[in-house]
Length: 156
Image 1 (cartoon, rainbow, N blue to C red):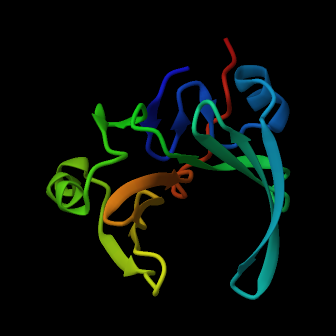
Image 2 (image 1 turned 135 degrees about the horizontal axis):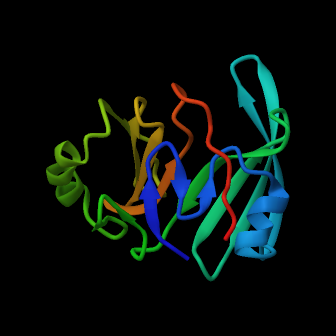
Image 3 (image 1 turned 90 degrees about the vertical axis):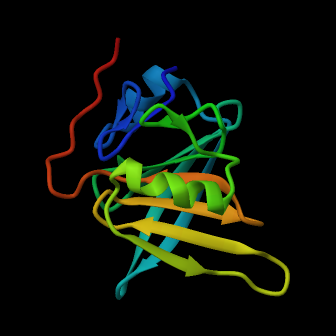
């Protein structure tokens, strides 16, 4: 499987807007499936999450959007963005790389408490979130480019 993150498009041959059947044809059956209700604005949206443990990959399908793929999350340094491996890098290293990635304006949020040291860098224009635990990048999440139609999957 190709492990290059395609901002606004997907990952390898798996594209935003793909059906569950199309994703399963490429990636196989997930190791685990979770159903999660997420409050967004004033309504609650049901999300189905597929987890592929060996790939360190999770996919989310929005039940309110014809159950189409709408979010990727990766946590392995094997995944790259513009050819650069980011998972495992420190906040300081990521700060020096951000401008070269051209992801748009970065909003930084500190979600730390007494037990966890968690920060999130959100890039609204590119629909990406970088999650840091103990000042090290642990996960990259991204969604479709909201300004364009979502491309569908092309299975080989």
